[in-house]
Every structure is written in C-alpha cells, then in structure tokens.
Amino acid sequence: MAENLLKISFAVAILGTLAIVFLSNNLEPKAVPISGINERMIDEWVNIRGKVIQETDLESMKILTIDDGTASINAVLMGKTNSSFRGVNVEILGKVTEYRNELEIEISRIKNAA
Amino acid sequence: MLLEIFLALLAGLMAGAFTGLVPGIHINLVAMLLFASSAFFLQITSPIVLAAFIVSMAITHTFLDFVPSIFLGAPDEDTALSVLPGHRMLLKGQGYAAVRLTIIGCFFGLLIAVALASFFIVTSPLFYPFLVKAMAFILIGISAFLILGENKKFWAFFVFILSGILGYAVLNFPVLKQPLFPLFSGLFGASLLSASFLQNVKIPEQKIQNVVVGKSEMKKTLGLSIIASSMVSFLPGVGSSQAAVIASSFRKRMKEKSFLVLLGAVNSITMLLSFVALYSIQKPRSGVAVFVGKFLPAFSQQQLWLLLIVGLIAGCVSVFLALFFAKTFSRTLMKINYRWLCFGILVFITAISLFLSGPLSLLVLVTGAAIGMLTTYLGIKKIHMMGSLLLPVILFYLAAL
Image (cartoon, rainbow over all chains, first blue to last red; front, side, top):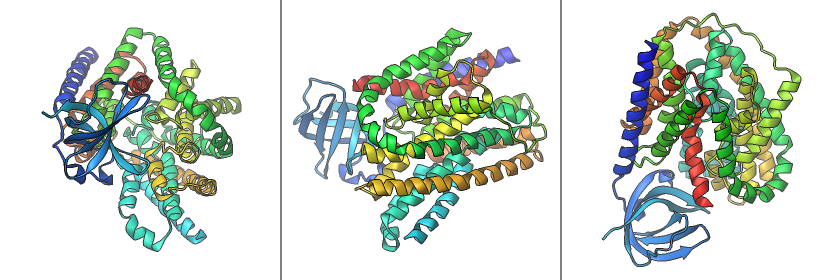
C-alpha cells in the first residue's frame, strides 16, 4: 500500500506542478482601465493596456509611466534592460503595489500591444 | 487617549484570537477592512488608536495561530513547520505541551525584540544594504546545507526544486487570489491530514502537562531566533518561515521541543521587528505594517514605543488566551473521532480555499498534498518543502543584484 501511495503521490506531484506552471503562464486576468485601479486591489494581478509616456532608468530597474486615456500609473520593470518603451503602446501584466503612498504596478510581463 | 488605546488593545486581542484560531482568515484582511472603513473610524478616534488595534491584533495572532496548526493540522505560511513536530507530540498525548512550547517561544521572543528595539533602530539602516545584497547567497547556502544534511540527498533536492517550481508558479499565478493558503494547506496540512485519515490514526488521551526545555537549550534557541529573525525582518519577501529555516540550519540536530520554541520566537520577533523596520528604514516589512504606515505617515519614535508597549501587553494577555484555547482543544479533541475530524478539516480547508482563491486553488491544494505525502513516504524532512518560498525569494534577490 505504501509503495502504491508513493507512486501515486509522485505522479500527482509532477503532473500537478506541470499543470500549474502551464496555467500560470497562459491564464490572465481581464484588462482593466487604469482609473479602475484602487487601494483595495493591492497585491492583486491586473492586466492594463496603454502608452508609455515616460521612462526612467534606475540602477536595477526601469520605471514606465503608462497612460491609457482614463488615468496614468507607474509600472516597475525589475532588472537591467537596454530596450526602450517610450511612446510604445504596451500590454502589461503585473501586481498592484504601493510605494510612498502611490499605487504602482510591478511588471511580470510586458509586450507590445500593437 | 489612554482609554481609547486600551479599548483598541482589547479589540485587537479579540480580532487576533479570531484570525489566529480560524484557518484561512488573515490579519492583513482585517487590517485592510479597517483601512477601507477608516473614513468612519477617524471621525471617532485618532490614527494611533487604529495602529494600536492593528499591533495588538497582529501580536495576538502570532500566539494563537499555532493552536489550529498543531491540533488541526491547518497551518498558514508562518506556522507550517510546526505541523509535523506538533502532530508528533499530539500523537503522544502532548498537544497542549506542544502549543505551550510555541507560546514560550512567542513570549520570550517578544521580550527580546522589545529589549533590543533600540539596538535595531540604530543598526538596521547600517546592515540593511549589506543584507539586501547577501540574502540570495545566504538562502542558497542554507538550502544547500539542509539538503546535504539529509540521508537521501537526491530526493531532498528533488522535493526542494519541485516545491520551488510549484511555489514560483503559484505566487505568479495571475488569476489565483491569496495563493499562500492553498499552497501551505496542501504542502503541510492536507498531506498530514490525508495520511492520518488513510492510516486511521488514533489520538491518545491529551494530558494537560508542561514540557521543560533546559535553560542552556532555551538560551541557544532564543539566541538563534533573534539572529535569524533580524536577518529577515528588514528585507522584503522574507519572513518568519525563512527565519525558522535559517535558524534550524545553524544546529545540526535540533530537538523537536526546542524547534517549537524557535518557531514561536521567530514568529513574534519578525512581527514586532516589522514595526521597528517601518520606523528605522521607513519600509513596511509585513502586511500589517503597511497599514500602520498608512495610518501614521510621519511615524515617530514615540509612536513606535507606544505601539511596542501595546504589543508587549497584548503578548502577555495572549499567553493566557493561547493556553486557554489549547486546553479547550485538548479536551474537545478526545471526544471526537479523530479520523472523521481529519476528514472534516480537509473538507473545511477545501471550502476555504475555494472561497478565498477560487476553483483553481483545488489543483494547488492537491498538488501540494501530493508533494507532502511524497516526503512522508520517502522518509525525508518536510522542511525541504520550504523550497516553495525559498526558491522564489532567491530568484527575486538574484534578479535585483
């Protein structure tokens, strides 16, 4: 019995983990307007679309200001990157966070919306 | 003002007892609800009173949340490691003693944290930048040390990596809310409850007795707790779980009882130091510290000390509250068929997961339980499943270098 349970646990652990990895890469929340993002959404995932109107390079991150016509918000891209997004229409998936009493988005995925 | 603070302390004790005893209800949720209704509360009281409520609730929670972890096998991320040693003691009729050990840890941890608060106020801005750069390597070293200390090294590594991949995917699962509840309930709770159900485990008569930890053992355990907790309390993404792993890696063979004291101590120290961090480095390092920071944007040292005193008083009262509930659980548990209680808790955990995190949380719960059962049948330590938090944090700190 113990050996069977070991085999079942092993199979479920592997298959379950693979399924979760697959789903987490392929399921996205619905797109929300930036004006709809509020403090109750801290730590929630959101999907926004808008134009990068400002770009600030820091030592280990890039801060993008995104405007979708309803409002604007800062989005933080961690790590060093040479590519510029200024003026580009982007689609961002990320988590709502707060920094110095301002809401911002911690970018998980960013792609060209066009 | 003093009366208002006292009432906030009492309300915090009640709220902390509720969040601590009911699995799945997090203090951050209550703090967020309070913040959402702050327009109303700030008409009748001041921000420091609301902050005092949050601190009282948070400290009470750290004492009480070991009770369901040990008696019901329903942990959160802070108490997950207490499930197995607590359950072993429960099977020896020492469930009450197990909770008592965590309470001793919580209480002395709280005393030490308050006593050393001034020290951390002065030194944390100095060691914070160094720790940020070193944390990834500290955690890699500790993970390697724990894996190499296991007899079945390959399987320990396998479970660490598999849990790490699961943790990373779950924490970055955009449509899963509150992912930590199904993750930790699966890995540490559901796996143990399922095994108990399948093996038809019988709970012996629970004795209301004390278990003693020697003075020198206690000093070593508390010393390790403060070192490990101070390493994580000022950094983002790491908390009492990582502190427990760090502290336990310093000693090759830590006794079960000392480990429970250690878990209690790191839990209360990291919680209290998260408020110190809010003042000393102006960064909130726990969910509740975020809300204290919102209520007190110009957080002064005087306010910090007031909140630390509130925390200390809440801790003193929580000792008695936690002992009372541990006694109640001990007496009630003997009257219930444990096999069906395990089944009932599994149904409850599943229902809470569905409610908090949605239908996809069931997949996380089942996968976590399967990994937990794998460690049982392979005969390796459950601490390797902490890869679920350690691996994502290591990647986070490596990316920030």
